[in-house]
Image 1: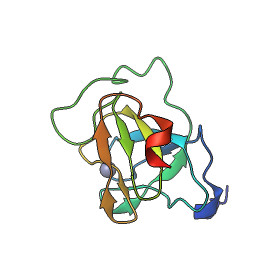
Image 2 (image 1 turned 120 degrees about the vertical axis):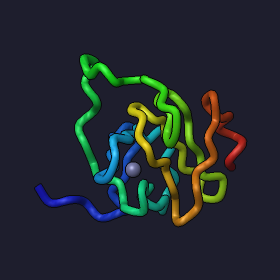
Image 3 (image 1 turned 45 degrees about the horizontal axis):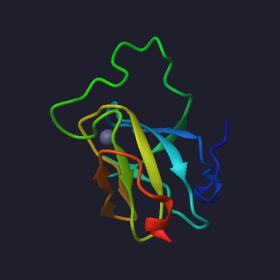
Length: 109
Ligand SMILES: [Zn+2]
């Protein structure tokens, strides 16, 4: 399957890191948002993490934490980590801000 260009991001899509186990779900995708990266590589579309995956929502000691929200204040992109990994999401070269809860949608307008 051919991968869509970076403009093909949609809320609800799952992206995974190709270098570590980090997976995220796109929550808010503003127009023109850049594809998040992890471990220095663009994250790739993935199937949603199955509920049976034992490591789902296991909080890692470093890197991305499953269950945490990550936001890029500049573009408005918001993702939620569904699987921990050693890396963390980066948007347009900027490390995304980790949040413990869902950000107010108006905060990024
Ligand atoms: Zn990674």
